[in-house]
Image (tube, helix red, strand yellow):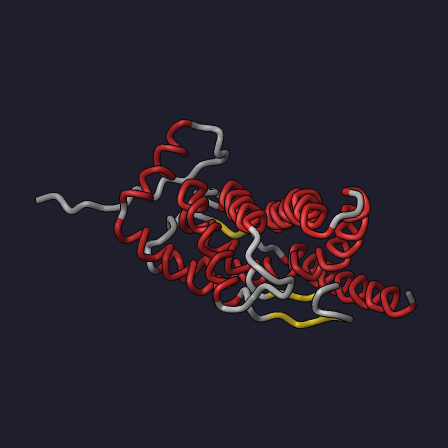
Length: 236
C-alpha cells in the first residue's frame, strides 16, 4: 500500500492555480488542521503579552506578530482565514483587549494579517531579508495603519486621516525593530520546520553576511526610532 505523503511543492509566486489547490488542500489534512490549531493557540496566548511604552493604549510592543507569521507560513492563505479569526477571538477571551468590549473589526484585521503573511511565506522557494521586510511592511501599512484607522474611527469618532497619521508614526517607529525580530525568528524556525517535514527541505532562508549586517542595522535603527517616538510622546 502506497504511503500517503504530503505534497511539499514550492512556488516562486502565489499567482498559480496549483498554489491555491495545495492551500485549499491543507483544509482537508488532519495533520495541518491540528498543527494550525496548536499555532493558533500559541498566537492567542502571546497576544495578551506586551511591553507598554509610554502608555499601553498608546504604544506597546507585542510578541504575537512573529508567531502569526509562522502560523501563516505553515497553514497557507486559506486556513489563514479561520486561523486569523480564532487568534483574535482567543486573545480577546484571554484578556488581550485593553480598549473594552469585543469588536469584530479587529478579527478582520487579524485575518488580513494572516493572509498577507501567508502570501509572502507559504510555499515560498526562498525567504529573504527583503521578502520578510516587505511582508511586515505590508501588514503594518495595510492592516495596522489604514484598516486599523477605520476601526478607531468607528469606535471613537474623529476623522479617519487623524488616526491614519497617528498610526503611521507609531508603526514607522516600531517597524525596523519588528522586521529585525521577524528575520531572526524565521531564520531559527525554518530548520526545525524542515526536520519535522512541515515545509519542504528545499525551502531556503537566505541570510548572507551582508544580510546579517543589514539586520543589525535595521535593529539599531528600530531602537533609535522607538526611543525618538517615546521622547516625542513624553514631550506632548
